[in-house]
Image 1 (tube, rainbow, N blue to C red):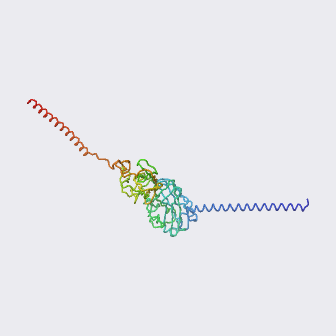
Image 2 (image 1 turned 180 degrees about the horizontal axis):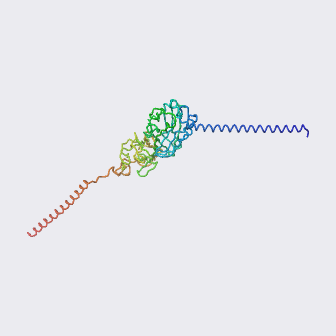
Image 3 (image 1 turned 45 degrees about the horizontal axis):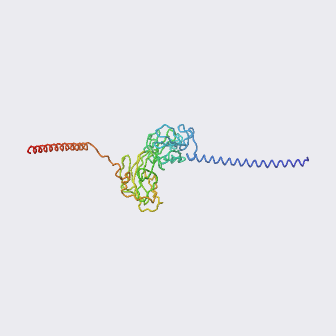
Length: 454
């Protein structure tokens, strides 16, 4: 093989190798770029998560190296709570459980919110006033409702007129497995805890506003010196309640067999039964029942009755359930209310396919909370029911066969009167017997005299 041939082969091999090298480099650079993009996304997500928990970003401090200026909650190795930037936490009230960033809540319990504060300025700055924070306020917010699958945020914000940064914030989260939990502030539980004379003082409700509530050491004047000995925390209690209920609406043509749907003829009566139960752990206020129905259904006057703990035999109420609605008042946890009323189908209906809609709604705490509907279908066959339907169906509301609202009283007076009546009857019977006996004797004597004369 000639030298020229060898050079040609070598050049060709070099070109092949160079092409492969460039392709490999391109793939490597592409991989590195993709990895960098992925890493940037991860870092961004982590930053967003961190920022959503506390903020703003600030210079981390340590116990050994405090700040040379007024700043709050920036020490990351606090012996008591660890990282001060995580200063809002929660736990179940009345327990010694550790405070946490996220807590599952249940209705019927109370929960304590914890907000820590610490002016990280070095203590040697206090005599000159350079280390004392002024205009220090704390504000907090909590969710009024937490639903299943949601995270309710509890927040705390510390502000000062001369701090850097001027505000710092943090968050904790509440979850629940219940359908819905309502949270409310337990009045008088927002308390400041520190080593000063204000220890144990109740903060104003401005704590729950954007303006916030002033804190302090010996006076709630918004002045907090630098150093851990002047640090402290705020606690307040949230009440977890459940305002849940169950509503069942049924319809019947005979007052005994109940279903979600019946078939009737024009002029027939139908009876509705609504059963409502408070399944939550808090009293429901101003519970109002309202019926909305077709124009071809007419409420029967005097047929509406309410049954509850105070009216076990039923109480006739005004005919307003389909007008303004009927307010049964407050319903305690676990309590049950039942309303039964009757409506009549119009006599002049000819359309057998007509469906007579009827819906009951229950409102409490100022809002409609439950709705339920039943159906009434029409058939052309059948005779019109007359007003005296109680004769054929004594079980309908308003009929005479129903139990009286009150049981007849049989006290001492009634017993004495009954005894007198019985004795009078006995005495009258004895008197009648003796009278008949005397008459018989007289009659016999008269008959005997007549015989002797003859």
